[in-house]
Amino acid sequence: GNNPNFVSLLAPEMLSKHPYLAQTEPSTDDTSYVATMILVFNAAKHNSVIFSFFHSYTPKHYVYIYSLLPELVPQLPQVHKILKGSDVSANIDSITSSLNLILKQFLNLCKSGAHIAAMTKTLENIEKIQKCSTRIHPQTKYASLLVNILLQLSKLRNIDRKRMADGHHRVLSKIKDIVCDLCLFQTCFRGSDHIVFLGKLLKFYFIQFLHQHIAIKVITDEDIARYRDHVLSFAGENNLPVPTQIRDDRNFNLLQYMHSQDTLVTSDATHSRATILSPQSNTERVNEFPSHLSYSVEIEAETHHVEPQNLAVKVRYPGFREVVCQPVVQNHLQDYYQNTVFVGGVSWSDPGLIQVSLVTEYKFEEYEECLAKLYGEEKVWLEISDSVQLKIHPRPSK
Image (cartoon, rainbow, N blue to C red; front, side, top):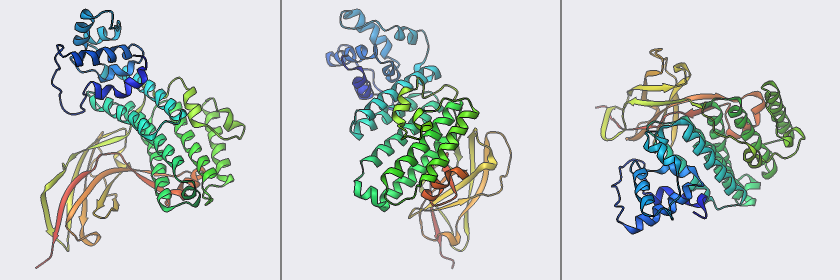
């Protein structure tokens, strides 16, 4: 337990935590397993994130190992709370606390110049907390997207300076992906004003970074000034403290700002999302239809914190061609979406797999004109559901 933060990164592997499959309970007669658990328990005393990766049987193993080797195993009051019936993975306050600790560790890795692989480990741990939860918590989705954005920014910073400066097409593609994630972060998560404000600061840091490092001047001084004025105005209207660097017209250090915050993930976060109930992915069945007609796909979905009229359906054809359809909503039931889209026809006539997902629209504001230029369109279609895969085969008419 001399380095509990390092142990917390390795905890899922050390505990053989699988997101989907139940694990066989190890024998406490296995000396290698006992030695591993002594290390994990000592690290857990200093880093409560590790409790999130415990199996259902881990608390009782703790009691047994502690009773055998009390001089090597620390007292962990949290374990006794688990034994009394509180489920760490299902408790929002516990998850929020764990995610804030994980994010602090991640920021320390960023500040120390850690390798991307070490930083990616943080994202994997957040996703494992999410998959081990009894239900999907908005906090885990929020933290996962936040870390992913910061990871992409770190990768962008590490790109060859010449390619970065010249605006290489692959660099511009990565920039477009980050713009999409920034819009997703700000559109699909709601809660306290601090959550909204962090989304705006992420965007400000991003355009400031591009202004400094890309020779192709897609971001101008006027763009920076316009967005800074918006940040100051929003903070004033909502009585939020503004980082001194922004107020003094200096370069804004996002990582330093985030590290200074006591809480980055709050328990009041809500997440706009949809779950497609029908159709289910099926890559074995071939759906045939006459090539001069279209194939109809009836969609039913459960929705959360999003109005049906704000939804559309995105169809991705082979070759990554995408079409967004906005058919008239067939019903107005709460938290439920039902509609029919038609695929194939003149849009596409070859057999293969298509992907269908639900999306919502984000329109760039006037002060975000530079982001619209980077993205290449005035609005972004944000995926808020997992995609469903279907195999279709237009057959020639006889």
